[in-house]
Image (cartoon, rainbow, N blue to C red):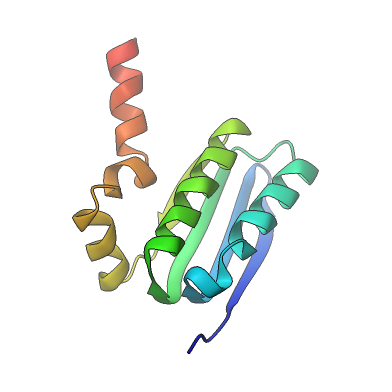
Length: 117
């Protein structure tokens, strides 16, 4: 049973977008977050940081993790940086166990940039 997913985009500061995610990030809701971020970034070319507030994510499965990876690509392609704020323990465990924590949180990108310079 899915609780659905609600994603809300705000730009309280110039250059920074905040996306509040509430509900389950899973197979049944796949596409919701990605569509929102893709559409809003196209309309806000000055955004350089996208901060996902993950505090109200109830459940995240492999489809949800895949969605986050796709969002990272869209954000990076727009020349912005993705942040995953307020990660709950379950999401943190998923990111750690799958080896995607550093990649999604920017640590891998920072390390690669340092190596390339």
